[in-house]
Image (cartoon, rainbow, N blue to C red; front, top):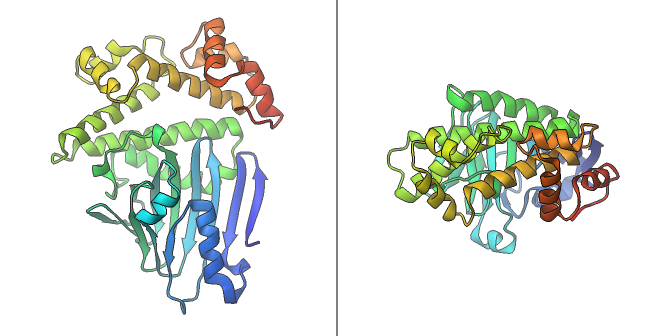
Length: 329
């Protein structure tokens, strides 16, 4: 086997090195392993090119995180046929640590400089190409964590200002150190990274005057989601507060969420429960009632009923199952 899997504080980390592969089968085995850990992809490498590289993949709470290093020019393609075969609902963020990777999706192409990142939708065809040696940090986000208009994929985000200036050094550090974090720290860091990426996307959308109406609606939702995420622990968080912060009417706010088949209150409740669930899964000795209050649910009896109706077990039992390594469905 060409990979090394290590159980660490933050979860299972998989390290794959081309040097561990037999020379005669290196290209084929590398393709197979990359598809196993990243999803179905078409890797195009010249047969005579010496293949050198490594991939490290792990998790940061609900967010996938990894590092890629290679000195072999090649390209990675996600075709429509591969999407039909397997279609996880993911957005990926690729950060150029060194080198100049080229990302194409739709009618856009971004050639990244070191310190820049771009987002792509794993549900849609794309190409990621390396003409020379690169080092990348890659983050995978479930669709439910980011509301991303298609118009914002394959655009370069610079670390020169705004939320991107905060996101880039954090992503670089987290990609390097993710295997050292305790589960509780990993869950919190995944939230911080997600919030910063969401805010950077919303900031960029405001700078794109040519966005069509539907994309602008999704951008507004993206901004609203980020606003809510940053204030889940505030008891006064309600539709009126959210609407006022975005200079829209409460009625229009409700219409935005109706288009997503939910309500403002239901969204806030779900995100609060998810924060509580993640903290309970991470273990620790903090009382359940304190965790619930921390995320805006101070009535412990009400929280327990909500949690059980959502996840099928009481919160204390959920935490015990996580500590024992037992899956809770």
